[in-house]
Length: 377
Ligand SMILES: NC(=O)c1ccc[n+]([C@@H]2O[C@H](COP(=O)([O-])OP(=O)(O)OC[C@H]3O[C@@H](n4cnc5c(N)ncnc54)[C@H](O)[C@@H]3O)[C@@H](O)[C@H]2O)c1
Image (cartoon, rainbow, N blue to C red; front, side, top):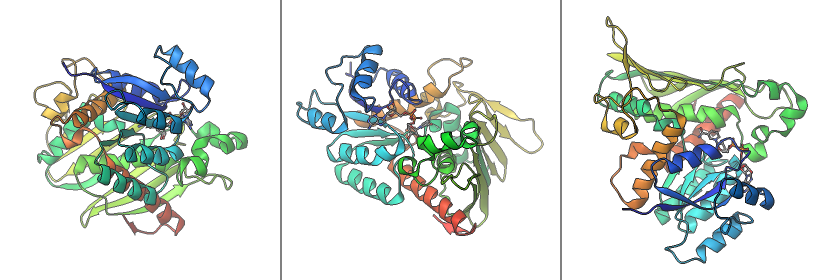
C-alpha cells in the first residue's frame, strides 16, 4: 500500500471560498495527508481553524516563513512534500517561489502570479529545480471537459474553425455600485489582485480552457473592457476577439456584472464537421452537434468515453459528479506525478498554462488601454 503524501496548506482558512474545495479534493483518492498549514495570517484564527477541522496543531505555524524554515529543519521523511497556495493573488508568487527554491512541490491557485515577468521567473526556478507544479484551473478536471479535449484531438468535429467561451457571473454587481465596498474588496485592489479583476479572475479560466480544449495557442487578442466607475481601477467585464490562426477565430466574453448570473461558464468549439459544447453549470452533459443529425448528449462514466475522461469518474454512469470531483481529479493527477507514476499531461494544468495566462491578462489590458487594438500574445 502506498503511503499518503504529506501536504501543507497556505491560506484556505475557514472564511475562505476555495479552502474547502481543496481539502475535499485532496482527500478524495486517499493520497494526501494534511500535515501542516498557515490557514490565516492571524495566528489565533489559524489555530482555531485547525482545531475546528480536527487536525493536530503542532505543525500549524505562525506564518509562511516560519513554516518553510521549520519544515526544512525536519528530516526529509517527515517533511511536507507538497504545498497548496490558496491565498489572495499577490501572495502566490512569493510563496510559490520560495517553495520551489526549497525543493517542495507546489499546487497553486490562479492567476499564477501578479505579472508576466514574475511568471517567467517562476518558470525558470521550476525548470532549475524540476519540481512538480500544478495550477488549479479546476474546470479541466471535469470528465466531460477531458472528453471534449480528446474528441477534438481525435478529429470528431474535424478542423477547428471557430471558438467561443463565455464566463458570466454577477457577484460583483452589488459591490461595484457601493463606493465603500468597491474600495475595500481585495479583488478590486491592484496591490492584492493584479492589473485585472474580471480577466485575471475568470477571463483567464476561459482563455486556458480554449487552449486546453483545442490544443492550439491563442495568438492575438483585441479587447474591450468595462470598469463602470472612474475610481475603479480594475476591469469587471469585457469582450475579447481571438485569433488562433489565420482562419481560426473566436470570442471570449467574461463578466462579473452579468446581473444575477452565478457561474455561467460555457465553451463551444466549432469544427468543419461538427460542434462540441459544454456548460459548467450542467457539467455532466457534453453536446455533439452534426449537420442534419439530432444532437447527441454524452455523459460521464460510459465506456464510449476516453481513458482520460473515465479516469476522472468514480461512480457508475448516472451518479452526477461536480466541482469537488473535478478538483479531486486534478489532485489525483498531481499525486501520480509526484510519485513518479505514469500520467497524462492533460490531468493537470501547469507552468505553461500559468505563463501564458499571465501573458493573456497583460495583453488584454494593454489592448484595451491602447485603444482596443490587436496585440499578439
Ligand atoms: N480555481 C478556481 O476556480 C478558483 C475559485 C475561487 C478562487 N480562486 C483563487 O483562489 C485564491 C483565493 O481565493 P478565495 O476566494 O478563497 O479568497 P478568500 O479571500 O476567500 O480567502 C483567502 C484566504 O487566504 C488567507 N490568507 C490571507 N493572507 C494570508 C497569509 N499571509 N498567509 C496565510 N493565509 C493567508 C485568508 O485568511 C483566507 O483564508 C485566489 O487567488 C483566487 O483567484 C480560484
